[in-house]
Amino acid sequence: MQRLKRIDATSALKMGGVLYAIFGLLAGVIISLVSMAMPAASREEMGPFGMFGAMAVIAFPILYGLFGAIFSAIAALLYNVVAGFVGGLAVEIE
Image (spheres, one colour):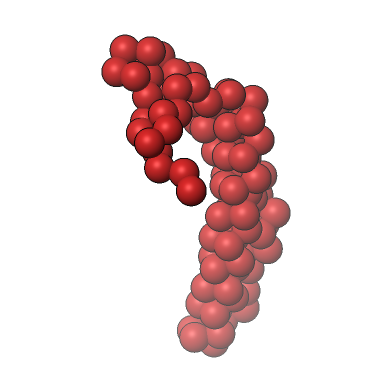
């Protein structure tokens, strides 16, 4: 059993930013598809829902990535503090 005693906050920031940007892109695509389907179901023009859907594909990855990076770095820093008290996370590596 190996023990993970410390996580580099910069590394966590980069990983969290990229992973959450990917999640944001997926969420943006889903929101975009739903917002495009809503006017089609009601036989009206796209209106504000169409614009929101198009912007979701751009805005969601940026916002998710930004907040994911920030909170991942904070989580890594908190992990390092807690690991100093309890000894870290036990991991089995093969």
